[in-house]
Length: 438
Image 1 (cartoon, rainbow, N blue to C red):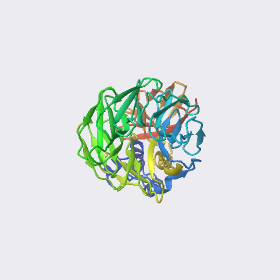
Image 2: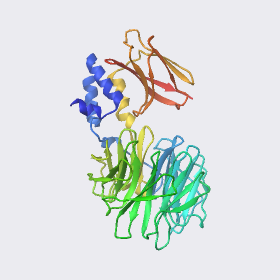
Image 3: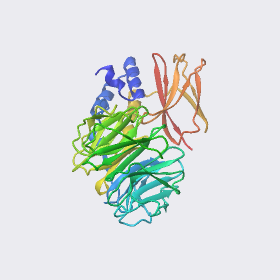
Image 4: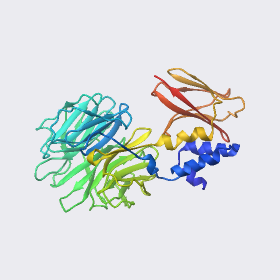
C-alpha cells in the first residue's frame, strides 16, 4: 500500500498509523488487518456495516435531513418521521391529507421547514416545526400554486423550487424570510419543465431539474438572490437532473442515467459516467467525500472523493433509495416502502485508533468553556499544534501548543459527546479521547 492511498483517508487515522508503525507497536499488524477487512483503505463502506433500520412505515420516504440533533424524514401520505440516532423512529402528526406528498425538508437553525404538493400537484405544501414534533401548515392555495420539490436555507432566506402546476407546468422558485410569508418567482415561461433540487453555495443559488419542452432533458438555473434566475446550458441536455450539492469548491449534480455533472462556477458543466446504470436521486458532501443514492429496481449507493471517480457500494437487494444525509457520525439514506439504511463511520474508522495507540499521556482539564491540555515532558512539543476532531473525522478546533507544552482550546460551542484530541508535531503525534457533558 503506498502513501497516496493513505492520503485519501482520515488524517488522524493516517498519522496515528504512521506514528505507531514508527514506534513498532505490536498491535499494528492485527489493526491493519482489521482495517483492510473493513474496507477503510478503499473508497467503499463495508456491506456488513450498512444496516437496515425499521422505520415503522411502508410509505415511500422522499427526503431525510439532520438538524437540531435529530433526523427528520418526509414522504408520501404527508408522512414525517423523526429519530435521534437513525435506529429508533417516531411518526409525527402533520395534519395533512393522506393524499399529500412531502418532498423535502430543511433545518434553518431555529425550525424545520418541509415542502411538498397536493394529490394532483394543484398547489404546494409548506409545513414548519420548531422541534420536528409539532408541525404547522403554512400553505395557501392561491400563493402556493404548483408543487414544491426542494428547499434550501442561506442563513437569512428560504428558497423552495418546483413547478407552477396545471397542464403546462413551468419551473418556479419561492422565497421566504421565515417559512410563513412566501413570494413566487417564475424562472421560465416555456411549458413542461420543473425543478427538483436547490442549493446555496454561499454566493449563489443553483437549482436543477427536468425540461420536457423538447423531449426529455435537464435544466440548471443560477441566481444571486433567489429572485432573478439565469438558465445555464449543459452538455447533458437529454438527462433529467435530480439533485445538486456544493463541496466548498465544486458543484456536483446527479441525473437519471446514473451520471454526475460537475462545475466550479455553476455556468460551465462537465458530465462524468459512474458505475450506476439507474437513476441517481440524491447527492451530498460529508466534508470528506461525496455520496449519492438512487436505483430503479434496487438501491444504489456510490461514493467519490471528487465527483468524477465513483465507487459502487455492494448492498444486495434493497428498495430504491431517494435521499441521503450526513449527521456528522453516520450516513442515513431513505427510499421506497419506508426503507432506511444507515452506516456509522466512527465504528469503521477513527474508533479503531485506541487499538492502534492506547495513549493517555496528555493531562486534560475541562471546564464548560475551555480545554486545557498539557503535554508529557517527554513529548517534543515545540512547533506542534493541537486539533480537536469529531469521531467521524471532522476537524473542529486548532491551536498552537505553547513553548511551555500546554494549550488552551475554546469548547463552549461543542455539544455533549466524545471527541479526539490530536497533538501533531513535525515527527511525533499523540492522541487522546475526551468526553464533554453538558
